[in-house]
Image 1 (cartoon, rainbow, N blue to C red):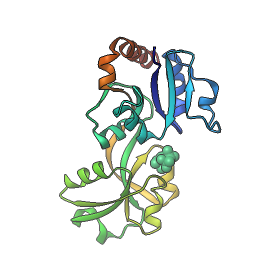
Image 2: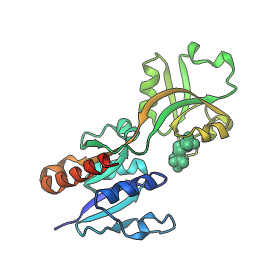
Image 3: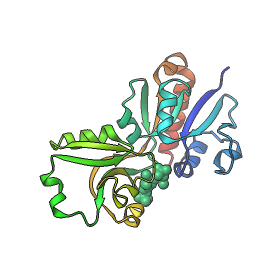
Image 4: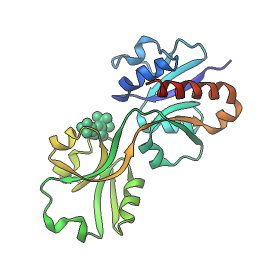
Length: 217
Ligand code: PRP
């Protein structure tokens, strides 16, 4: 039997994911939780389940194209890409944060949003950003970055950013303030729709295990 492949985001979410995976009966080999381990694909205590760790945006891509059958992705990523090949049956109740608009603490009043018809925004989320501003009748010109987005205002790239906020410490450390929430975010279990059709028993049983693991918390 071909192993099922689960794709999960690397980074700080792994600490929250570890106990959830354990409650679902999945214990990856030790290197999986070691940031210094250069491996990308790992076995688990279940011989028909393997696990890969990739960038959060790439989890959705791997699962949407069927390279992995199942994954863990933030609702921010799902909203941004709106992949029709993904089925997201379960909120895992981890990875809570928000996708927010932020600007310099010292934004001049003449640059306020109230009088703007066009704004420049640095972000990893151009689709959600454009939609958020379009609903206010403002055209958003998005400058795409993949990380360290909070640097954009101080370096003169754009006066505003849209990025994830959790504790708010990164914003504060970079002289920025949150001025609007675009979406509240949490991690979802995601499934490739075609894989779910062909492997419904195996994948369905695994979804049930994750559901029990979430509710056992
Ligand atoms: C995320 C996000 C913010 C930061 C917010 O980045 O992009 O930069 O966390 O967290 P805070 O509100 O608790 O300070 P992350 O550290 O995951 O790394 P990244 O820049 O590679 O996305």
